[in-house]
Length: 104
Figure 1 (cartoon, rainbow, N blue to C red):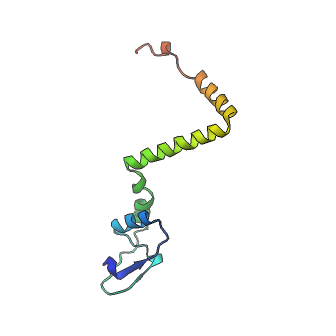
Figure 2 (figure 1 turned 60 degrees about the vertical axis):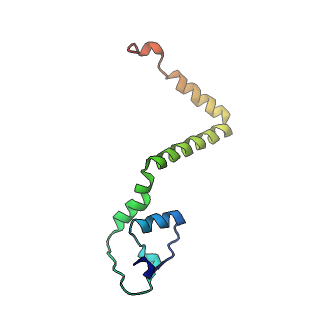
Figure 3 (figure 1 turned 90 degrees about the vertical axis):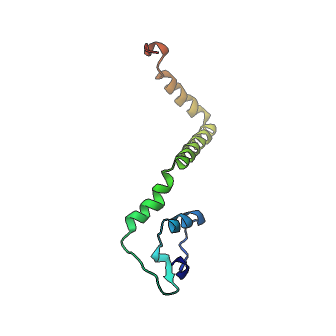
């Protein structure tokens, strides 16, 4: 039972809740307070996948990741406008023209 454990795992609160909801207890940062606790050891890979992969595989997480990437790229471009102009000019040179797509 989860009430028979204490857990100070140094994870963010939301990550800690997600880990607990997935049924995992990080035993390196927990200890038993009462009887009736059954531990299944050897779940490292499954716990790692749950914490570091599945949580970020949702559509919402993917959208947030793309938004964060775009924001970071914009900030970097604003800090170095001349480099941004150069990179943008290079991209424009390689952008196909309408005549390159006769099927449209």
